[in-house]
Picture (cartoon, rainbow, N blue to C red):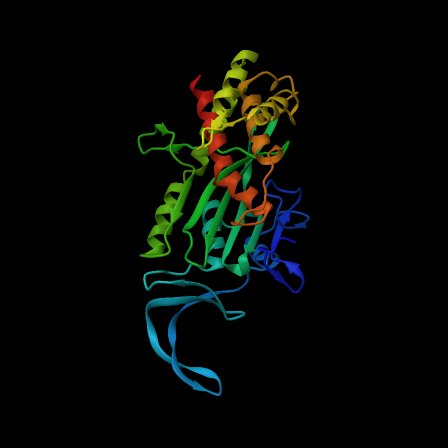
Amino acid sequence: MAHELEIRDGQACMMYAGETPWHKLGTRVEKEVTSAACIRLAGLDWRVEKQPLYIAGKNMVDGIPVIGSKAPDRYGVVRMDDQKVLGVVGSAYEVIQNEEAFAFLDSLVGEGLAMYHTAGSLFGGRKLFITCKLPESMHVGPDQIDKYLVLATAHDGSMMMHVKWTPIRVVCWNTMSAAFRIGANGKVDKTTDMVSILHRGKIQEQVKAARDVLGLTRAYYDRVEECFNKLRQCKIRECDFTRFVNRLVPDGERADGQKIDRSKHRDAIRAMYHGGLGNDHPDVAGTKWAAYSAVTEYVDHGRAYHKSDSGEAAEVRMNAIVWGQGARMKREALEMLMAD
């Protein structure tokens, strides 16, 4: 078990429903659950408080330092069920409770409609993530694309609360990172598929603003579905696909001038274009949709992710797929295929 996963009473504080998800994290349950059940199953039913920190004095009583003065502008974020300090923050920092994060997602989807697919606690509760499934699906030819919102936040002051749209291609359980915004004038601008909330200031006002943006979820997914179907209807020649992959994954060069050969990555994407899950369907094969699906399948399933200082391989995979380098590659692939 990855050491970053919180373990309580011998169980990992992480759950997922149904098939193994793209991030490969969690303990399986049979089907998606409501927020109340998800909080319990994922072991997230605890609260945090911001408490002042004190400097230990020089005097000792029975070998224990006497509490001295209060630390200026320093507070501990304390997990109340075990009294552990999750992080040290300033006076402006405002906590966001676990149940508030779930309530935020519930309010976006509609009461009783949000079904939670994964959730988990990392680093002893310092970080957590939640994946919420929306009730409807999109359809791109023979492919079903489920709609998700992914939330990630931290109690240690290391990150804002981020909420991101994540369409999922069911046939191979891969995320489709597509970024669009519907403006007040009805026009669609390619910008971002994520909103962020600071742990400071008037959080409820930030939440309301984020809710207003994410309230465009239906319009966003309508636009994404339209875009994906255009890709499916557009054939791509083999030479153009090769040019696309070469542009997307070019060879590199190290600081010392040594060449970086990325041909194995291009070969993997090419193999998934021709033989990836769902890409052999007559309505998909040889299209730009197959090309984009090959990139997303490679990023989510074909590419190796290794343990690093930031976490175990499974956590590195999730971060890369949803927010990091993998998400950028998928976004670049979509931009290139739409532009050509």
